[in-house]
Image (cartoon, rainbow, N blue to C red; front, side, top):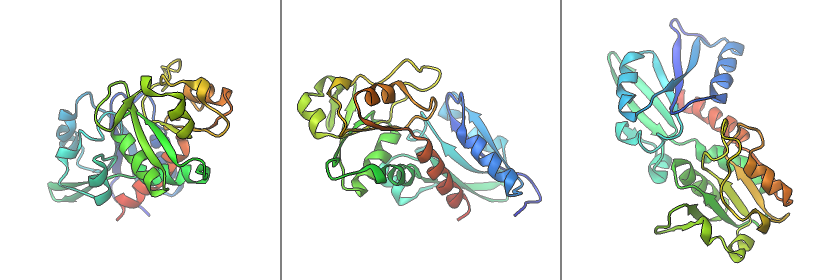
Length: 251
C-alpha cells in the first residue's frame, strides 16, 4: 500500500513527553511500505485544535490523550455510538473533500482495555475500584461492565457516584478485588508518585492494573506487588487500541 503524497496521522495531548504510539505507527509504516508519518502534536490548549487542522491539510487521523479526551468532543461533527455513551474520544477519523473536512470521534480505549484485562478476570474479581474520573475512567468502566464487573469510581473529591480515597475501608478493599489506576500519578518523570490507597489491605486475590506504561513498573504496581497482588501495566492496552485506531482510520 502506498500513497502519492505522505499522509499524516498523529497524537494530540499536553504534555507529550513520550509516545509509544509514534514509535509503533512509524515502525508499522516503514515495515509495510506505507507512505505515512505519525507525529506528536503537543498543544497547550484545546482551543488550538482547529488551527492544527488548518495547518496540516494532509492529516487524516488523530489519537487523543490527556487532557483532551472530553474537551475535544465539541469539535466533532459526529460521534461513534461507543464514544457517545462513554463521553470521551481517543480516536478521530478525518474525512476530507477538497478544502472541507469532517471529524468523527471514536473510542478504542474500551476494546484495548477490555481485551487486555479479560484473561485476568476471575470469579472472585467481579467488583472494581477505578482510580480517577477522567475520560479514560469512563472507557475502563464500560470495558469492565462488558466483562460483568461492577465498578466504583474513586477520586480526591466526593460527589454523586464517586467516593474518596479516605473512604476505602477494609470492607471495600476486601470486596473490590480489581483496582485500576486511570490517573497520571506515577507517569514518567514523576515516578515517585502513586495513588493514595491502603496498599496494606491488598492480597494475592487482588488485581492492580495501571493504564500507565512508562515506566514499565509504576510505584502503584510495585507497592501492590509487594503485597502479593497481580499487577499489569497499560502497554498491551495501548497496542490493542492502536490496532483499532488503524482499523477506524481505514473504514
